[in-house]
Length: 120
Image (cartoon, rainbow, N blue to C red; front, top):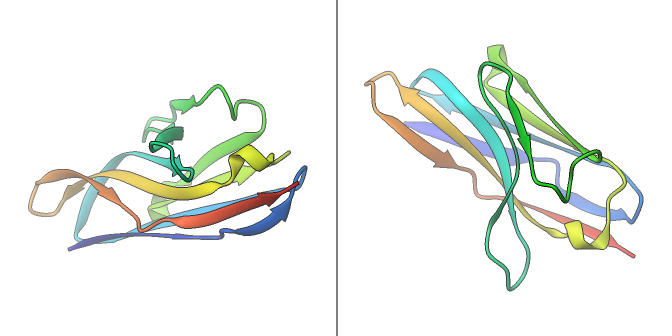
């Protein structure tokens, strides 16, 4: 079994900062990409940032220059540092990990999400 668990959401004022973390655990052989997606009320889930095992990053235009994704491969953990937060960043943030299990099945795993609320 593989689990992906986020932590770090909460309430912050506009202009503030917040950090999220996501840890993958279980029967993991290797992890390719890890990343963050978000879903605001009434909207579709959208990509925030991804980071491959080789270090390639991809950011949504709306967060470039404000958010930073990083990863600790030894801990199977991905982080998202969010600065200069705006009310429109309010959403449930989901972690995604593309994992090859020890039984050599590759799947995308999702966390249950963590709520980030930015007040104006």
